[in-house]
Length: 497
Image 1: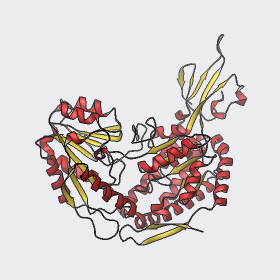
Image 2: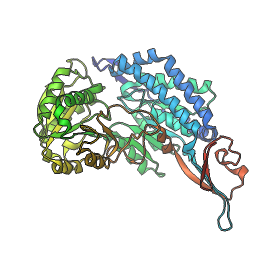
Image 3: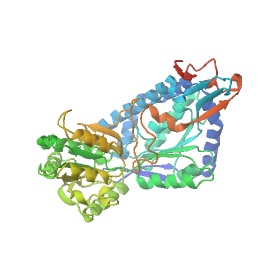
C-alpha cells in the first residue's frame, strides 16, 4: 500500500509516512458518515457541545505530545505551537457554546391566519462535510480546526483529509478525536480521516459529501471548486484562499513611519510569512522613506524564515522572481538558514501606478515578502485602492480618530475586504461572535461566509420551511414545546428558549 510522507523543514529529512486510504476503507468511511448524518442532525446542540468539549479536553491532555509531533513536521516552534493547541481547544469549546445558544438554527414560526397557512422555517444540517485543512496552522485550521468544530456544532459529520505537510500529526489528531467522540457517545461516523491525494479527490467527488471546507492556496481551492461544480449534484465549496491584505498609512500617521515599519515587518514575517492574513502590500505617503525604513526594520529583526514544505519554499522563490520581473525592486533581503526549506525574507519597492488589475504584483506570494508603494495624494491612493483584488483583511494606520484621511480610506477598503483593522495588524484572527474571516474573490470562494467565529456554523445548514405540518411531525428544533430550548421568532416577535 502506498503512503504519504512528511519531512522536517529544518533539515529536509523524512519525518514519517502514513498509509494512504484504500478504496475499500474510503467506501466504508463514506457509508458510515451517510448513516451518521441523520443521527448527528437529530442530536440536541447541547449533546454536540459535549462531543466538542471531549475533543478539546483530549487536545489539552495531549498538548506536549502534539506539539512535539507538530514541531518536527512544521518547524513552527514549541512556543507558537503550544499556544496554537490551546487556541484549537478553545475554538472547539467556543463552537460547542455557539451550538448550545442555538440562534444559528433561526427557528421562525408564523401561525395560520385567515389568509395564510402555518409556516415554520428552520435551518437544518446539510449533511457530511469534507474538510481540507491548512498547512500553516496545523491545529487552529487543521484536522480539528475551525471547519471541523463548526461543522459538528452545526450537526454535520466531518471527513477530514490528512495534510501532506503534517501527516503524523493528522493521524494522531484523528485518533484522539475518534476516541473522544466514542467516549462521549457520539454516533459512529461523526468524524473520520482519509489520507492521500487520490483519497482527497474521491472525497470531494463523493455523493455523500454535502459541502467542502478548505483553507490553503488559490490553486488548491479552485481545484476543489471545479470538482464540486462538475459533480452531478453541485455542492458548496467554502474555500479560504490567496490574498494580499493591504496596509494603508495615512499622511498623519507617516510622521512615525519607523514605528509603523517595525510593526509591519513583525507582521509580514510572523510564522515565516505563512499566514493567510499576512500583510503583503503597504501604501505610504511619498517622501516618508517607507520602503527604506521597512528594509532597515527587516535587517534589524533577522527573521531567518523556514518554510513548511519544499514545495512552498520553491513556490516562494519562484513568486519572488515573478514579482521582480513584474517591476518590483529589491530594497532589502535577509538570508534564511542554510539548511532545510529556508528562504530569504525580502522587502520590495514598487511604483504605485504598476498596481493594476491583472498584475502579478497584486497576487499573493506566500511567505516572508512584502511590497511598499508610495502615493502622492488622496486621489493617487484612491485610484490604487480601486485596483486591489478582494482580501481577507486591510489595516489602516492612522494618526487619531480625527485623522482627516481615515474616513474615506476605511469606507473604500471595506468594499474589498472581510475585515478592516485600525492601528493594528491583520495577523491574528479572534474566534468570537462578531468575527468575519472571509472576503471577496479571490480571498474566498464565497464572500458571504466566514470560516472563523459564530457565523461559521451557518455554512453547514440550510433553511427549510414546513407548511401546515402537524407539530409532532416537525423536527425537534421546530416543535411547539421547544425541547431544545432555542431562541425563536414567533409571529415576528423574538423569544428566548
